[in-house]
Length: 231
Image (cartoon, rainbow, N blue to C red; front, side, top):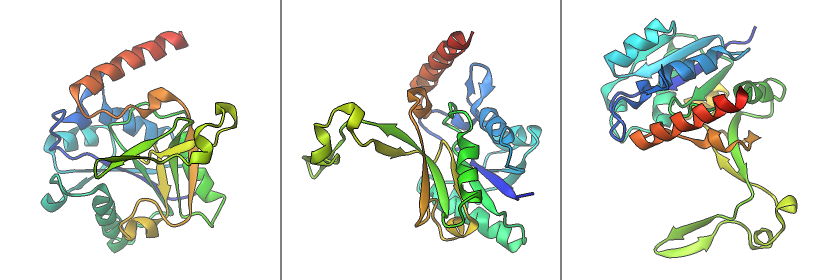
């Protein structure tokens, strides 16, 4: 049996949407939804929630997962997710409890495509040459950025005018939807290694990331639509 640990980061100090990690979407908290996604994996055998908040800790323990208390210096607005994941990996290393793979799931992304977590995990189990695997949204739109007030196109010019059916897709990194990585990647302070596998999806509703009240209200409408469609 493979040892595969899911890591969920649940800081209490969110500002756009207070206590967003335990905000309820149609009666079910975002934390509970993500824990359920992890429990539905056929590979994950341990779920760890990292938090600095007692209310989140209490809810996580009620959902029968392990809680790591987060140090104060890793709980402010400047602390990166990568630094917290590295800290957790180092704790597990010191306890001689490093898993074969880590899985990272962001709590604020509630509409994961079916089986995408296991697709990321499985891609590493069957290919030792890959050090990480992550979900990415596939789109055929053209993309631009603005740098020093000057717009420039990211999409290669030779692809810009190609008909959609022949166009190479642009892939948006979505590690919050699902990411699997070998321990050495997290220990190095990164989420994605040097030789990743990209698992694509194209469901538009899955890109919703909840950070404000409007995001939450929009997600409720989307979920109601999806449930109606299923029925």
